[in-house]
Image (cartoon, rainbow, N blue to C red; front, side, top):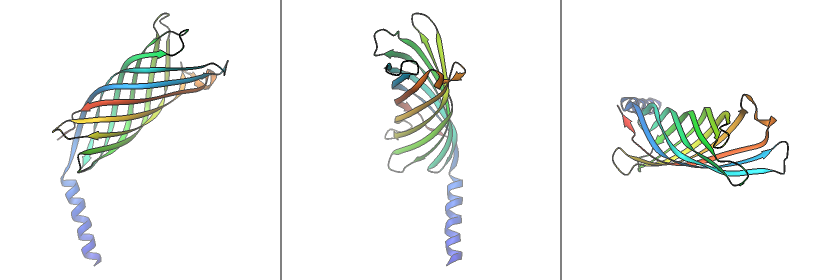
Amino acid sequence: MKKRLMMIIASLCVSSLAQASWMIEPYAGYQLGTVKTDDIVTPVDSTTGSLNGTAFGARIGYRFFMPWVALDYTYLNGTFKPNNSLLNNADATQSSLAAVVGVDLPVLFRVWAGYGFMNNLNLKDSVTSITNKLSGSYTKVGLGWTLLPLVSLNLEYQMNNYNKLNSNDIKQTYDKFDHNALMVSVSLPLHF
């Protein structure tokens, strides 16, 4: 019985390795984000706003039949619009890099989750041209639908965690700086 079980496990492993392949998945989409901050100097003053823009990137990794692992790079170009009319809009650029684990399910769906170890957000005031640089990490989860051949329609949620503002601890300026985003994208998952 043990011998038969070992043969089944070995054949599944060999089958999985035989179907393993490199993957590259370029994508483009639109990101809708919200920003909420509480200033440390005047805690009653909180700022909310939207940070929206176009995003593009790629996942490069290795696929083991259904599961896969990849590095995921995303670049965002957009605008931060605070709800407070006394504050200026800001041009926003964000570059991020994550390690991602996912699985392509046999029912035309894909799911993944990742941890971003590089996350840089630059906010350039549209009036004063002063740029604030935030850096930190993030986590993300995603769901893709692969009904069309070679095309995946994706929905991804990203929770950002910034710990630096212009090379200083962000807690010296903000009690809270929340930035979460939802991205809708189209990707081309290629395996070779």
